[in-house]
Image 1: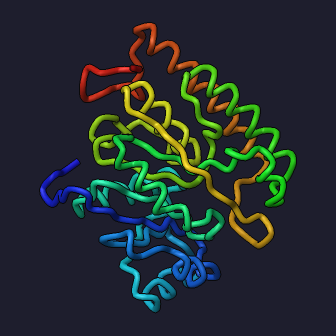
Image 2: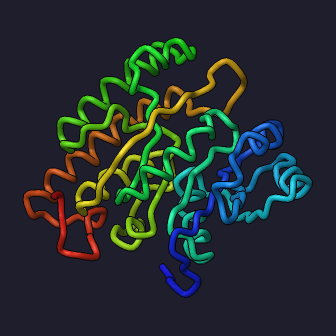
Length: 255
């Protein structure tokens, strides 16, 4: 990805949007704008008034054909890199993840991390107090235990929708062969681990009481099995078997 407009410590927030019109104003008011050099909205071809609402709020926006969560995120990261960002903050357009955590996440990122995740499970009881469905709670705890064991990274959660990416991470990993669906979010974590980048987390709260976009049960089950497949590929790559997901720009791996 190009370094032509790169500026040290430049922070760009990107709002991922699909049918986000009802949530956008409330979310935008809660974003700590003083933390950013720029905030953009990247729309995944919403049929609603998302772009009209973004324009009304004065948010710079981009749109493209419908790609899915992963495809939209990759498009947003590419745009942020082209704009010269060193740090890129992923913000979901439905406002479910509390943006108040952004200052803490950026502070931690500047300590030398390649990727920061927002974890709902630093306090194991908090997700239930926030009304996370018990089925989602148990699935997340179970999958994260497997992830933590295999990857050897002491995170309390691996399946979260809030994260901060570094330019160093995106220059090191290759997202060409990553999923255009929700699996992308997990693949990037495993890629970062394989390529030896530090991964950290900060506590985050999540709103389950109000209406938000969410993954269907069928897709959730498929996603769970897909993450196990990615872990299998990761183990094979550790043994020396080549896989297109696990190509690092430098020789540093899984340190």
